[in-house]
Length: 255
Image 1: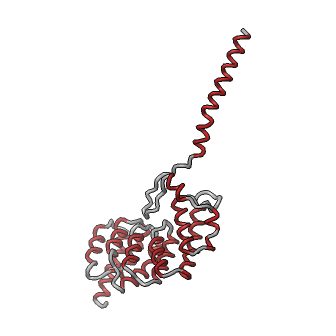
Image 2 (image 1 turned 135 degrees about the vertical axis):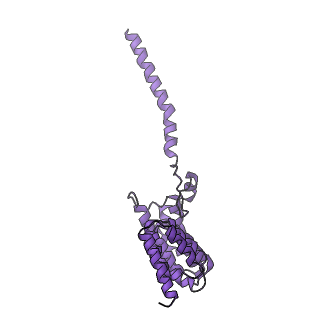
Image 3 (image 1 turned 180 degrees about the vertical axis):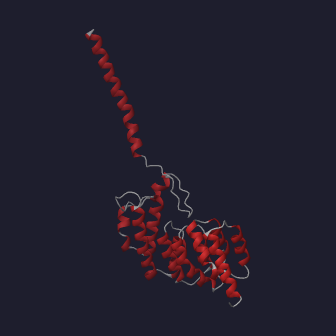
């Protein structure tokens, strides 16, 4: 009986050692694999890359730490690259801490770019960062674009970004810039953007457009906005748009 128990214990020990040897390397391999990041359907086009793309786009912490010693355009590229790959590693916090730190650094580098960069660099980065998923960065990019010689390409980038925004504060900052470009005849896409926002946009953005559409109304587009007003459900948004339309009509008649 004792012999049988001893043999059973030895067999169990042998099996356990074999199983540990079999599973150990697999666990080590699994631990070494980079995490697979889920895809993101960001409305602004900033999506999480695949794991292979994360590895190729990873930026060393030293590179991020030396941002002030390189040209601002290079620093901006470093930041946007590591942000897209989720590999900046700027903080040890959780949640949105990393995002806010990247935003802080981007804003600082945009200031440097405005002071040191060429007009071509400034225009290129203004257009790119108009699509960045943060209203503060978008507003800074828009302000930079407003100080540069206007172009259809920059106007188009701004219109495309604003058409997808839910940020009424960003829109409030955008109206004067859009009017500045409007005076130069750069209005391509304005009507579709505003109609899309007031008709199907987020509540705050839609309300903002309904209240501020007046300077953008003209004989060629007022009919489209009147049609949208008729299609809206009764409420504050419809009332605001109707009020803007009435004010436009009074100004048109000289009242």
